[in-house]
Length: 201
Image 1 (cartoon, rainbow, N blue to C red):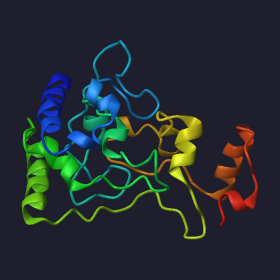
Image 2: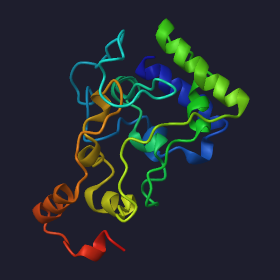
Image 3: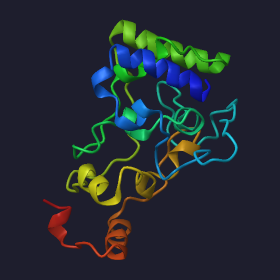
Image 4: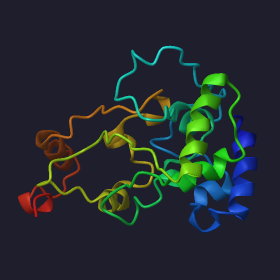
């Protein structure tokens, strides 16, 4: 799908089901996402590679093969369009199926492999059975990571700080350890609290 293709689909979607949930960046058509990202500058246009062998990809295989390099990299859909709760919630939230079907009622994919995965989205919607996504970034129950606080301090383009360059990944995988030392180092570098109760409460 071209950049103009998803913008056209977004126009239709905004008029329908998702009109109230579309972040400002997506409404304006401005590129967004983690850390500026692939092909988001004024240079050449990024085209996501065609994946023929998924066995070698990092990260768990999801029930629907979602390619962030197509959605966030090639088509420049901002991270906050799908993860819209991240600025006001402790949890980033897995995007609801309604967000996906808003596009994929219209966008059917150009490659047979993409079409097959989009059919899974459509079937999940018609069956009213959301995919059982495998969580990738998980912390122990005794650790609190309030996303909204971090987004407030670091900005809406700070996703790459913890999640890496997702817009360049063919499949989402964990790139940071998310262990205590990694978090403490980040806090120390930014000269913010290292009090235990900031994360353990």
